[in-house]
Length: 465
Image (cartoon, rainbow, N blue to C red; front, side, top):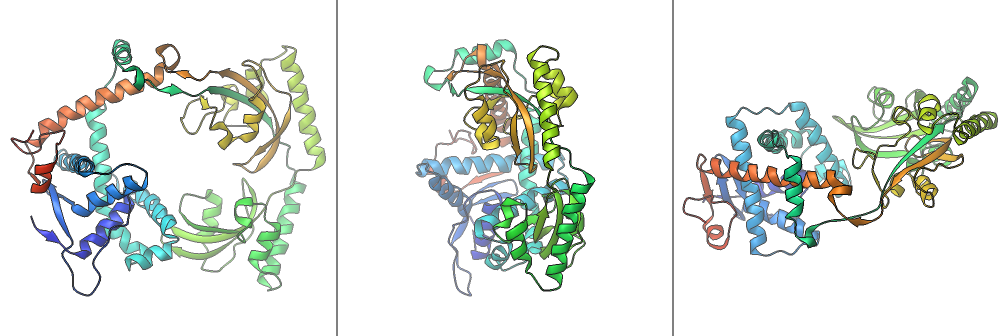
């Protein structure tokens, strides 16, 4: 099999980063390329390098997994499966939109830059601009997405019947049945004190004054941000938001930002969080480095008292049965994300209404404390609510709808979870059959050392078992 030079290794390191693998492979130094890598497998026109396998193995070791020769064999076979998917996607004319590729590219670039330290350090390490990196690895990311799309088409029609779910669960070894943590479903009714135009004007004028001080040279941007900004995440670093990419900020913020030149400061703009001035520090395509100062309109004491009085009345009406909690949420709650669900709050981790009792504290620590001693069906008295995501303060009533005890999974209580496990097993059977049927129609070559030492799941080479 032909060998490859250090230039290929450097590419494979970056590819590994894009695939969220390790990037610690060592490449040759000096002006002359040295042979330090080789192709260990080929499926059709798609090749797999020794460094691909080594980088993945290193990542597994860093995550605490054991590594041996059979680990390398399993990694190689996973790569061969991916290459088979890509090859078949080309044959079947499977399409991946360039916009999806670019979106994935941006996410992975941001990940790598975060690991290395910054966009500049990433460019320095690879000796090329972000734009050139994107151009060079566009096709590699596209192939990964092609493989994902091909896999989806193979299994899209796979379904499981209730009988199949029951059979799957019945055949599970006892030590394979998962332990399920306590889960809760919760709802709330939120009232936010109304911000008046006077409150907004006060915040706008305060920030406008800060802008004048900065542009006149009387104060430094970072100093005012540290002392006065209402963004707790950035004020400690002088308002610096670090490197971001288009789409991570609210539209009004980005519209102002992308009209700025380097070091220019924007006019005062308004978003859902309040009023901002933004300074663009650097920009590379859709990636930008900026800092900002946020002044959120302060809620007056009168507005807070008014909201408290209103929610007390709502609480009284629910307590006396004049209105149900769910109807009160629909009529009065200011939380647009939950009010039309009777106040039920969606768990962003799972996309449903069930919350793992151990992770609800990550999203809403106040909620965790409120429901700690509540019984299902009960609701709390009104209390202050700090909405950290939207940086707003309100008052709310919380209801604990249901709570499960920690338990070993069963069909009676965890059917959805078991059904997904049964579906995944059935999908794997379909994938296994698909791989077996496609291997014979593709050119397959594997390095002799792997053929000798590996016991593959699939018969990639005729006569191999």
